[in-house]
Image (cartoon, rainbow, N blue to C red; front, side, top):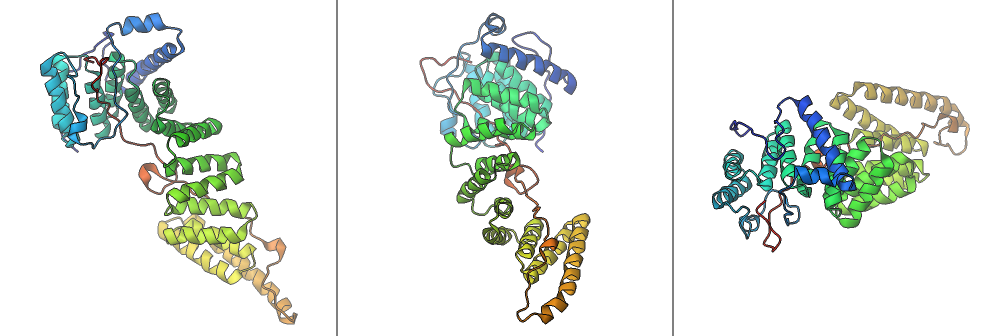
Length: 405
């Protein structure tokens, strides 16, 4: 981890002391977000004008991610009327984009000493602390940026991101929604809002957020995946299958999406296609234990006992290698039941002119496939696809309405 410098914090704007304890910080933050939402509803404008009396609207570039050409990062007009502060800020941007986080923190601090109203410098400091996992400090810097510039949608988005990471999910929802009040067409914010709503069990609202995100950006495979997952949990099987297909068009290597879609196809009475799709999941991830298990169950219920045994044995081995002994033992019991049933049916088969391998319907294995979910940070796991976990930095652009904040 990059070394850090320690600075003495001073309060700005409201005169409220900065706090270091997490509980105090979050108590203050809840008050702050509540005031922000009162402002968005129009009920407390006089109070917000008092708090932010000297703030002037800042024209911002579209949200950007970290690694941009330096030429695009530098403001065409000075960010501050204090030329020394503006110079320190530009140096901070350059160092930040070179991943010199320690140097960037130092120069942004220097800029703020010259001009305490540089909201963009506060936002960058929040980004630095987020990347260094200094989460409480990141929360504080984003909140300070918003106090200076209350229409700073990127700072609200970043605040939501760090609160989400801290597990403060309801506060994260509030921050994401406030960002969308200011900039309702930000697909990334809608995507992250959908994720935290899903985690809170608010399926219908999560579905609506994902659908809006997709309407704005139909190239996000994870948005389709998460939407399919929410639809699946809601019980909307046909729509979930169709949405998994769209996710796989964009990301044909997503083994998890194949496995989930195949499970739904099996439940929906399309076992032949389910078998084919399970095999696609296995091709993408040959160690996918749940796909082997689900394939084995489906094959058995279709009467293909030999291939079912092969798939179940592979699932058993993979679960054991993964250390999931409980699931491996369950598969052992299932395989023993299947073997016993085959022995009971063998005399009947010998007497028949054309032996049948179709198992007795009463022995069918219940089709309860193990759906998977995906992706913190774009890697397979037990959760939906992760937030777009990169803070954004908004750069002032040349405009007649730009200000020094």
